[in-house]
Amino acid sequence: MAQYDVIIIGAGASGLMCAAQAGYRGRSVRVLEHTKKLGRKILMSGGGRCNFTNVHNGPANFLSSNPHFCKSALSRYSAADFIELVDRHGIEYHEKTLGQLFCNESSKEMLQLLLTEADWAGATIQTETDVTRISPIEEGGYQLHTSQGTFSCESLVIATGGLSIPNGGATSFAFDIAQQFDMNILPRSAALVPFTLQPAILDHLKPLSGISHKVTASIGDTHFTEQMLLTHRGLSGPAILQISSYWVPGGEVQINLFPDLDLAQWLAEQRQASPKMALHNALGQLMTKRFAQTLCDLWSINSTLAELSNTRIDEIAAMFHRWTIKPAGTEGYRTAEVTLGGIDTNELSSKTMEAKKAPGLYFIGECVDVTGHLGGHNFQWAWASGYAAGMFV
Figure 1 (cartoon, rainbow, N blue to C red):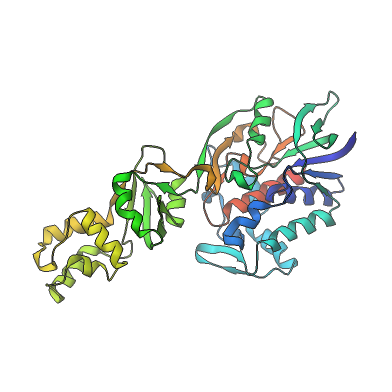
Figure 2 (cartoon, rainbow, N blue to C red):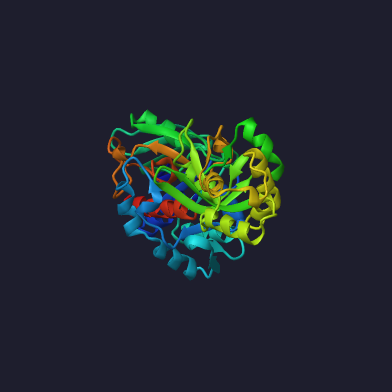
């Protein structure tokens, strides 16, 4: 039976970060990965350029039943710390909107950074290894029965992610193990995910698939101002993905189609300048003409500007500033970037990520009830939680 100080199950972002940190501390480390190809979600991220962190990252960028839990790990391994690591490896990157950092060339560079760090630290990685059973050892540590033999370790780290993007290798493994050790698991759902729409509205919007428009999407006091993308199934784009993490089935989402404009004032000015202009043509100066025409048809507001009273202009402006939709649902884990909910943070040490009920057992990354906003925050949680565990395993 092969014996190691540390075994990490899952060779994704958090698992590889943990492997490197533990290895640099002189621990013997083995990483077990059930797929053949390493880092699939890393390679897929950011359109193949890996949005690896966010310069504005902080606790406010995360959802959790305990919003304080993530503070410890994030303070000990910040975005600046990871950026320094990226700089040391000579990877060129650029900043997009809202502090998002992307590789200039390819997300393969980020995966290679992690594999290089793990290699330098002396950690070994074994692919195509399915873990079939985990048993605590009486004198301490864990025994793993796998498709490639039996292993034992003092410290066992579960870094197998959540349920999002199953074709990227996601499984319920982390939650199954947490359940085995009688840990509480909070309800899980797809997050950072596109909305689907009811046929009554989708039939109108479907022909506009591919059109993008800047909006503010809101639920209650939570709002995000970014691009919205119309799709053949509903709504997507950064603003929609962000607000989806706050949506509950049956709930409504409010969309301000002109967040940077007082539409009532603008329409009044247009009426004075071009009274004979059709409303949809006027609005076509602010959004694609097809989108403007479709919404005018949907809301039965086709008329010339001259025909609009001040009261009617206010009513029309309200339709565009406060477009309320009730999604049919989401596209689910198939396209979701992350899993909302997961292993209850009350079951873990915020300093070490160790399970309180199972000494020597650690959970890191997406499987924990810490879910980041879009824009590199979930990767930063992977780096920070992986680092936190790696310093103690």
